[in-house]
Image 1: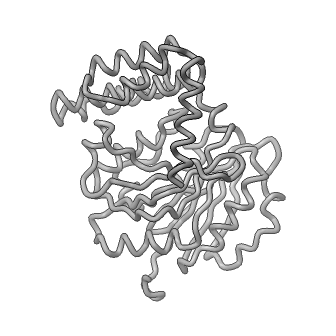
Image 2: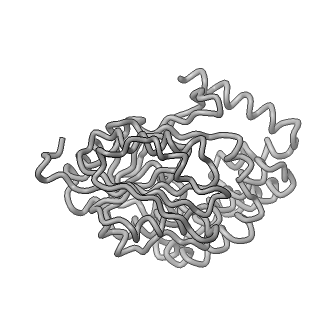
Length: 320
């Protein structure tokens, strides 16, 4: 454990909108961290009702500082994260989605990993267990990103962590810039591309994050927003960077984003669009076995997709 007299301050930002049932538990898990110096900024992105009453009874006396900030209008999750960054002062910045949870050792283990890795490590990723609406485990994520990972993220061979699963050094935020608040989705992927150009990554493999994948996530997977806004913006911002790594990396970058559109189309019942996206992805990257598999799933529409979902869940459950 990092010694108390040299313990860095970690800033935790929780963006929230209209989920008072989840938020108190998220705030509580931050207050229960074993890391000794933590400040918390909860950013209410103009929820229908102010969120202060929902967290009023949570004991945060052990934190270095805690505040709630409310946007005057709804601006989106990344805008809320940016507000939290600007209102905080810690050497490291962590993010917790309001429906996710951390093990009490999360920040302590991350701080230790930063210390072990040295000053050129700017991002630490952490493992997670994935649960459903009922809290039943449906999967797990073990980070596999260490060292210089920009090309691997662009190629889609490394899935950088969601916001609840990584901590970033503030100096790297200053160098790479804050999250892009124009993006309705793929916010984490876009930011990781920029962050990774500035530093090395390190990992904590233990599943210290509980990631809820609920019906809310499925409802808010907006295929049209990904197709019309997020993917075109990522291509405009980072295709030239991918090309710097060579033509093959550029092709795989485009293929990985096209494949992402295919997954989103499937989840939302746009089976013809899913077929189109998986075929286009294979045109860019004919070696990707996943695209062939989901192309077959998409061919049968709901007749094949829904049974495939059940099989996938059964396989996941057999591993837990």
